[in-house]
Image (cartoon, rainbow, N blue to C red; front, top):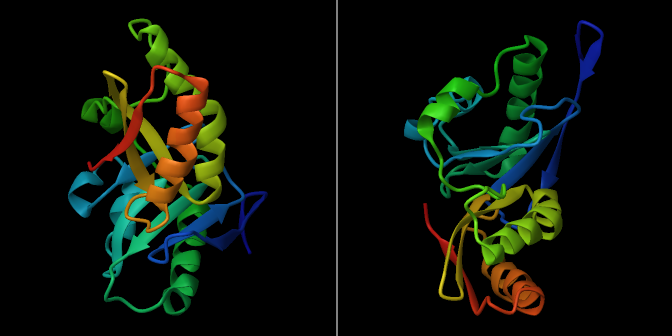
Length: 199
């Protein structure tokens, strides 16, 4: 444990359903109420923390949420047990030093169009889809170190974007089809299909 002024920073890990990803949970808010996904180093400019994480040769993608970071490693890299102590130590020191996690101005400049927040120009079906994602889906997938973002709705078909541990996870398609699609069809009769869109 490392002290930050009066705060002791602790990091613990949780396995996710995706064997290539590991969830690193902090006892400090990193990106309160929000999440952001960096699929590669080139996209990581808005996050000084993500940029530093990409300097580890085994890191393939970085997902930052309220109080956790989900890291996906390259397939050919060592197993997680070999690298977890290094990552935990790095995160403790980074947070102890009070370094920035995400630069909001840079995020705003990126203009990500996918969001689960209801906006004034959303039609009734889209509002209900976003509310269902926010209230039912988000808490469940965050437990597994991921996120699911609304992309679009057209003619009964809902397009979602899988992030963090959900992206590339073998069981995410089962969750998407059996879980999310089933629930949406029951609660929102206009929905006929739910699909995942690659970034």
